[in-house]
Every structure is written in C-alpha cells, then in structure tokens.
Length: 568
Ligand SMILES: Cc1cc2nc3c(=O)[nH]c(=O)nc-3n(C[C@H](O)[C@H](O)[C@H](O)COP(=O)(O)OP(=O)(O)OC[C@H]3O[C@@H](n4cnc5c(N)ncnc54)[C@H](O)[C@@H]3O)c2cc1C
Image 1 (cartoon, rainbow, N blue to C red):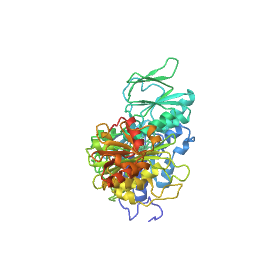
Image 2: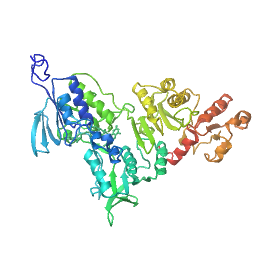
Image 3: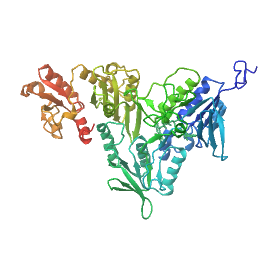
Image 4: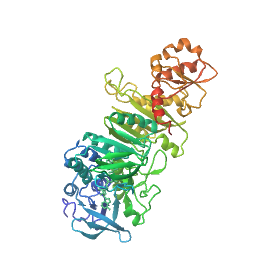
C-alpha cells in the first residue's frame, strides 16, 4: 500500500472516488473546492468556469479601472496551476456548463477552446454561478461605450475605452455599491462623472436621511447627481460620444456609460434542471446549502438566504456570505453538520474619502417587513477623543427592538473609524446582542483611536436611556403636526445660524436660571446640535416636573431628514 500518494486507492479507501463537480470558480466555488480538499483527500474535485480565470478579485475590479491597482495580475488570487499543484483540484476555464441532467447525475459542458461539448458525471454538484448585471431592455444599452462590470475582461475593456477615446466624462447609471465605487475610480482617472439614479437617494440600502451626507459629499467633489430619474435610452452624439437620456428628458453627455443598476441571480441552469427557485429569484437552499435535489448544493449570489433580522428570505450579492456558504457546502459534502446562519447585510463602501457602512436592517427594511416595535437613535460623535487633534464626526443611526433592546441594525458614515464601529455592532448582532451589550462593551481606547466612551458605547447608552425612560425621544416624523413646544438649547449664535421653524431658544447654559419661563402643561421637545445638550436639558426638566422629550441627533439630524423630505 502506498501511504505517500494520497491518490492511491488504499485499504482505507477501497471504493471508486466520489466526484464533486463545481460550476463557477470564483468566490463561492473556489472556497468550496479548497475547503473540501482540506477535509477530504479522497474525493475528486473538478471546477468549471466559463471565463478565462478562476478565483479572481471581483471586488478589486473598480480599482483596476481606476488604475489604483495597475497590474492586472494582482487581481488573480489563485490560478488553475495553483489549484492543481497545491490542492489536486482540476480546473477547466473557458468551459461553460450548459445543462444539468439530474437523472443521469451529469452535466453537459462546452469547451470554449476546443469548440465541442462533453458530458461529465458527478456524485455531488455545487452551483456557484454568481449573478449577472441587469441590462434593461432600453434603446442604446448595447452601444459601444456602454459597459457593465463583472469580470476582468470587462474591466480591461473599460480601461482601454477610457484611454483609446481620451474619455473626459462618464455617466454611471445606478448609485449603489458598484456604481459609487466606479464613480470614485473614474474620478481617479480624471473624468467628470454624473450619477443617474431612479431613487431620490444614492446607496439604496441606507435610510434616506443617512444618505444625505454622502450625497452632499459627492456634490462637493463635483459629481453631478441626477436623482429620482430613471434611464430612458442612450443615444449616439453627433460628432462622437454618447448621450444618456433620462426619463425626465434630461440629457447627460458621456464618453462612456457604466450600467450599475443591480444584479440578478444566475439561475438558468438550476431552473432548466427543475431545481426550486424562490420568490426573490434565487435558488432555494437549506441551511447546509443543499438545493431541492439532495445531490446538488448552491452558494453565493445565485441563492436565496435567510435574513437574520427580518426573518425573510432575500438575495444578498456580497463576497463574505458567498465565501462562507462555499465553506458550509464543502462541510456538508464532507458529512459535517455545519449550518449557514443567514445574513445580516454587513457592507461597506468607500467613496472619495468618505466611508459608508451598515449592518442589519434599515428602518425602511423593518417597516417593509412589518416590524413596528422598534426605536432608533441618532448620534454624531467624534471618531476619537475630541481633545486629541483631528477628531472627525461619525454619523450613526442605531435601530433596536422595543422593549428587549435587541440590536436590529446600524448605519454609519464618516471619514475615519466607521467600519470598525459597524463591525463591532455586526458582531454583537451575531450573538443576538442588545443595546445593553453595546453600552457595556469594553473596546480599545487611546486618544488617537477612540474615546473612553466609544461611539459604540454611546449608541448603546443612548438606546438604553430611551428604553428605560431616562431619555424619551420624540418622533421626528411628527414634527410638523405636534403642538409640543420646540425648545432649542444651543447658544444664541448657533440658533441664529439656523433652527427648526417655530423653535424657541433657551441656551442650556442659562436653563437652570430660566427654566421657570417654560410651560408645565405642554410637552417640550428639546433639540441641540447633535443631541447631547438636549439630553442634559431634558433630564434636568424631567426632574423638575416638565414633560420633555429629546429630538435624537439634534439639528444635524434635522438637516439630513429635511433634505431627505422626512422620507421613510
Ligand atoms: C465590480 C464588483 C465589485 C464588488 N465589490 C464587492 C465588495 O467590495 N464587497 C463585497 O462583499 N462584494 C463585492 N462584490 C460582490 C462579490 O464579488 C460577489 O458577491 C461574489 O463574487 C459572489 O460569489 P459567487 O461565487 O456567487 O459568484 P462569482 O464570484 O461571480 O463567480 C461566479 C462564476 O461562475 C461562472 N459561471 C457562471 N455560470 C457559469 C456556467 N454556466 N458555467 C461555468 N461557469 C459559470 C462565472 O463566469 C463566474 O466566474 C463585487 C462584485 C463586483 C462585480
């Protein structure tokens, strides 16, 4: 018996080798293949990808277009040869899987190089075909100069187009993650950029008011925002170039157009094979990533997943879940009972120096899911101690269940330390944590990194104050119809520079000597710049027999809500 050769058929492995075939060799597929090999040396693993590469960094593609990553080879995380040499995994690139024959346990593959098709048999099959960019059936979307970004060849084509046509301006259709990353990178290539977005905001996962600082930032960086306006068609311009025509009739000139209006799960193979497809358009899988056929698993952008916060099924095209699902599928194939926990939509995007991150549900997502027993707090703390030079605000919104305080979601924007706070909150959500856990969390502190009360602690403390009645909050949405007294406790000069209509000014610095001027028979809604002085004032008033509520986030949040039209 040869003990050195793992491929030899030994007394330990007398039967025929089980064959595991994997469709799609990038995030989910490659993770599955590599994990499976680490768990089981006895199986044969063969991976197919219709593209020329496997295991490439899709997430790096916008930065390759922007020339931040200038060497294309850096996008290749692993190669065919590496899979073969290190893991004994056979990889077929330029090979499209065109059909699954479930009864024969076989797939039909078309070899793009040889130009022929063949049948490959499997014992187990894993589908990780990803998602396809949506190309709306509108006039002009197939014109030269109109691109979507999904693969290395796509990014190569965009790079060449910019150079060959000396492109000066671009229109990005769609203001989500990929659209915004493309905006940043096209600006890096010194193009003037306009965003055309159907919604009245960019970054659809954010609540409308949280997207406002981002939109202001984009405008300040010279990005033209054409919001609340859809794509009607794309035309060729006399004398060269393109014109993007919006539904409103607005005409945006462009030397190149990026379509980034979202992706849809690649389910053609699964559908044709009769596998169950869910209402959100993804392949239905169980917690071990097994499809409705017990010999077929599916992972990544192509599947529907369970949203841990809303309890609903959803699709979430992100790399982290795809990688973890690939690992879970491998463990399942290897006979382990590991389960995928579901998703919480933790995501981050960098836009021209600003970081935008979120985890869990948004307010609008909760409302859509019919959740009503929740509250939110807004805060705007510095990313580190204010006395240390360079502190910059983080705009943070925390959503939590009432009355148990379970964390439901958080959104944050700022220039420093944003993703660190969201990652901490995301981890707390994984453990089914509450706002009390955030208040009590012991986090890193030295003046250049954080504060003795970190923004995460502060968010938890504010939410605790709401839950235990120390800081009742008024609902901003009721501002127009309330007959409460609006009390602004900022200093007179701050008040003079702008305030909520109908608010009166009594600075917190004078409150102890002048509070008797306030009525006891009316609710008093207290506001300041970011919420802190209002909290102190409301505590003082409450203890003196007044009915006071805090306007969470203060005038800073008011500005964002007003700009967003108090949309929910
Ligand atoms: C430009 C861009 C930037 C992104 N940035 C981020 C980011 O910053 N953070 C983040 O979390 N996520 C990001 N994503 C999303 C992330 O890349 C995906 O969620 C992840 O790659 C999904 O993994 P997957 O295995 O499901 O699909 P993919 O990684 O897309 O792999 C699917 C593969 O299957 C192949 N395939 C499809 N059908 C067949 C077939 N019939 N036969 C053979 N092969 C087939 C495809 O060619 C493809 O190579 C980004 C995506 C893009 C496009």
